[in-house]
Amino acid sequence: MLDHLVEKYEEILNALTLDAFAYTVTIPDSGQLAPAEAIHRLQLDPAALRTPEHVQPDDLTLIAVGDAIVTLDAVNPGPDRKEATDRLAGQGFRHWYLADDIEGNTTLYARYGDAEGEVRFPEPLAIPFTPWTDFLGPLTPYAPLLAPLYDDIEEVGNVNAICMAIIEHESGVRFNKELLERPRLFLPIDQHRPSM
Image (cartoon, rainbow, N blue to C red):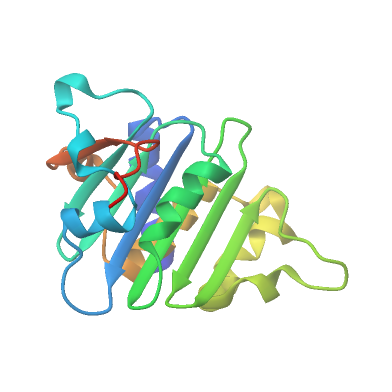
């Protein structure tokens, strides 16, 4: 099942030719995460929403998909931007974050309520005498799929395809051209909502 999804994502990513990006999917345990609630959780100002004609290259894109919210960030991902999208995670939510930077470093982070897990490539998270699998948390069932990332570099295909397959398998949300053509909201990520 997942091998087929990985192959599908290899095709999708080859067709889309993405450079550096960050992609998140957030789903509530029950109900729907509406765009207005997502903007509130992100602590961004809804008055700062931009129309497609006025979108800026570093704006955060929000896309509603079923009960989920997808974000897409098409700039080189950094800790400050991950910190912003991590606000979507928390109790009552499942959240996945995938980033690929201009140097080819990939991060897959998942948070289910308070349980967190992370995978990095090409260098794993490392603490002496602690295997990389100890950092997987909710991603632990995917350790056999992720192991080649560290054990056999020659066998590794598209790292992002593996990570996106995991996200789709867990969330049911497919990253593809059709997703990118859905109605979207654009927000400057550095515009926090005004204080009350």
